[in-house]
Image (cartoon, rainbow, N blue to C red):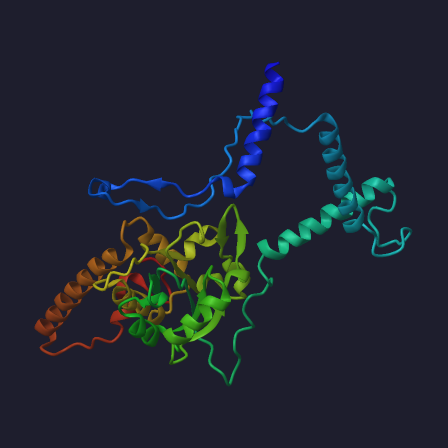
Length: 356
């Protein structure tokens, strides 16, 4: 009985809602009714038929079924097998004598060839682009500087800075121009050896060295990538390591040839920095003294916390000793003595001695 009454009510309600004429404007009494005026209200939009909404509990999401996992695993195995077959496909005939795996079972042959190709692909990026990074030294009538100076670009000569308006810019370290002009040929063969990519570093070097003092440029592809570090192998430079000096700010990058390296602190853009100015007399002294093996000189200063400060102290002592010697000669001979050979005797730099 109750169900029949409910259905009749729903039917009657739907008919009333469908006939807009039944829902006509009503006459309402406003505040003007006290004056005897009757105001008809504006027609309203038809009323919507009331509907009941019920909360439906969402179905709980279940994880993949066993069948789904099996299909996923089979797809992964099929893709791996296809990749091994594709990469391990023999380039020559299976019975070719050049095939080192021709006597192994066929599945192992494909696996070994795939392994070799993956290793070659990795070495293409991890190893230097060439076993000989620099050409042969210049021969007469051209002049080959006796020493090679290897420089890192980032945080040694320039420092990158970001600006919203102009993007990335590079700030020149104070003294860069004097450093390159005074230490370039004929004293040193200047080489940029950086872990930066060539397409981004090459324009910076062009603007940094308009005079062309930098003879060679080596970029990231010339480094060896190991344990997250771009190592710089000086033995691949095709130069005598006893005549090579590397200036860097990363000790790990120079770990293969640490005896040839001068490790500086990273330059963070300080405009008052004087490091390059202090390096010029130190390197000039080495170059003009004809040192046989620069590694012996750097080993002597390596025990110091700051190589340049130690060099300044020794240079001051040298000047005092030279002044005393000249004073004694003037007293004995009554004349003046020549200053020639001063740099040859500075800290023991000379042809016959390598120790300071």
